[in-house]
Length: 148
Image (tube, rainbow, N blue to C red):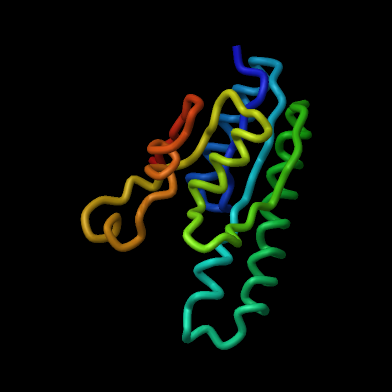
């Protein structure tokens, strides 16, 4: 049923659960897997008080590559065809969710998998939700994995 599964990774425990689910599903469906990590460049470079925006961006890029490498090793060990991609939101106003959905469209994925932290109330209001953003704009089915 699914041939191309895209999973969003961020290195959190919830994201790791989503990755494991995506790997199991890709293995079961004989599907290829794409793992993406997204950096919100726009928020770094538009913050007036950031003293070393370029240094922070480089640190995030390095961290993203480490997360992607670890995730790829997991998928490789499971025998799943996998590729990884680091995404950056360099367009003003583009959100992480938009970058993930745009990658899903261009690949093209027929399923998106993402973790959701299940924040509510003030935490949700202040931090927003990438998963909620994906739900709003994804043209393909979305499997959300909650943290336990």
